[in-house]
Image (cartoon, rainbow, N blue to C red):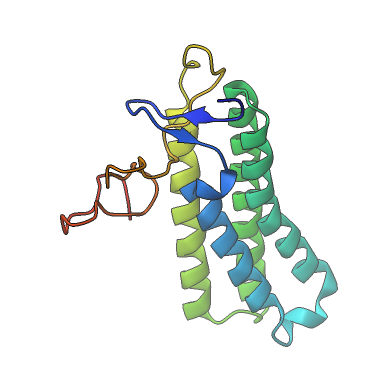
Length: 171
């Protein structure tokens, strides 16, 4: 099927970037950054608040854009850019803390989310493999349920229904 990405080791396809755990984590991070920057005095620092917001949005946007390129080499390049944007977010968080915009506990929470997001993006980057026959690409860290089977794909953050066990590689 055109536009589908196939998973290494599974006979599954991912059709939407929204199904990628990496993109889901990046979305969560962007939301947390926006919530953090709307509080005083952070919101009055237009330069820093705008820059960290753009960097956080860049992470999720690059994952989405790379996914839609339909070539693993390009997808990998966009994932590298997403990782660089995560470093930018992390750097901005430190200065925001240094000048008193973020309390130490909140900084720790945000840095943990940045690190977790980075690990998922890195795992997705490492998992890109040579293309599957006839598809042009494969994406092992993304997935959907196999219709009618009750099985989940690693990286989707779900568990196998009825088993009480989470699927390896999930949250």
